[in-house]
Image 1: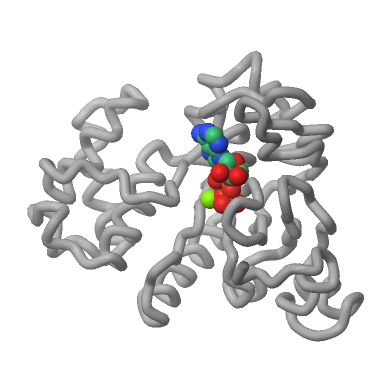
Image 2 (image 1 turned 180 degrees about the vertical axis):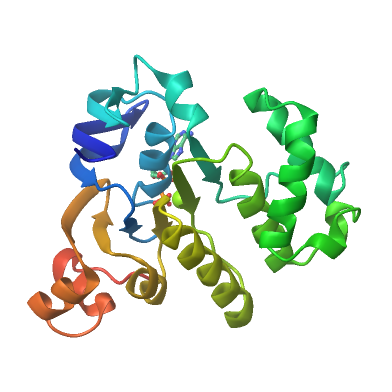
Length: 243
Ligand SMILES: Nc1ncnc2c1ncn2[C@@H]1O[C@H](COP(=O)(O)OP(=O)(O)O)[C@@H](O)[C@H]1O
Ligand SMILES: [Mg+2]
């Protein structure tokens, strides 16, 4: 059974159809990517999966449960690294993790040692007492990753995890993703970087204007359409990923 499945998923914002009747299945333990330019509908699909908002129509199941019927059970088992920096600027690095754990009713005697472990994992131990404004962009992304792991999730959602990062920091985030995959977590990511999709994802769904045009492994897609993933994207949508 897939860990996430969607059939006929539609999401409207008023009169705008942001996600237009998409189907996908994500397998346990894989890294599944949604590849597409800004406005394609990627973040909206993530929001439905982690029960931030209900679908307008369609059937979406996570861990076998309907997102409309079991949002709290699903949320408890998903970690989300959001696209935007949503760290609390008034708190230190360490406090950001411990306070976040309260949303999951994790008591401090559990969250404090876990925060320490996760700061070690993302190589921010030395920054534990630093206020958020003292962090570089790459450090903030790593802290958001640590925060997303505070509820020990089975699925980790990464929304544009390396946007705006220099190549070194980008590779550091990819390394952590590899480690998490080797521990058996399921990763769902969105990206408009074809290099990221190619390096990290077992399978990608090519998204354009709220639709999924094709889903397969990067290697199969490149074989089928010839050339790079950018070329695949252009062939399928008539648009460039950079648009
Ligand atoms: N809360 C919202 N209210 C109205 N329109 C939205 C909202 N969020 C996203 N949109 C619109 O929905 C479309 C898809 O957005 P989004 O899912 O953020 O795409 P992506 O993550 O691929 O950039 C875009 O046209 C965007 O402007
Ligand atoms: Mg987005």
